[in-house]
Length: 209
Image (cartoon, rainbow, N blue to C red):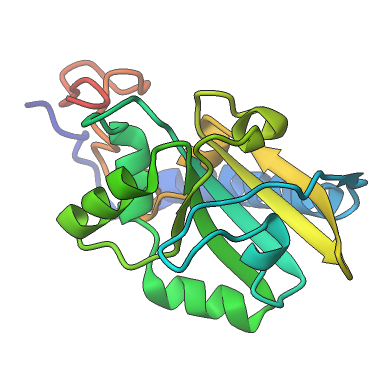
């Protein structure tokens, strides 16, 4: 296994300082994107869904739990007994303390899937998950969000009983929210996945290998 080049402390600091300039530029670019995101318009969203939950049917408005904002992660439905490894990894990354922090800011988090509720509850028990997880099975919610049979993260805002969609993202937009990915991106070997641009000899493996 190859390793980074060994240099003097002064050479390392120079290289680190040069990288820091690029990191600061990226941070400013992300701040500018966040500012644009806060200025996105919103679109009225249908609310006639009946989500299946452990406590009975709930509407989209119910999922807000009285708060003004709702963030939904849509977990892929691959059929009976099958579970998306990427969605599983992402869901395992969502901390209970983080959800409490969102709630204090007026944001409710819910994971939704087209999987039947019984399948969801069995998988939750297997994984030890306690986060809110409901079923959209039999509804058009996934299609109306544009997720279809895939995964997606969407943000909603309510004005009284009216629900609006303010943001959505998928693929790498969701990937960047994973804690372990953020930490691994700071390490010498990165995520060690085959798609990464790493020097020759760096350890790499299939993303879901």
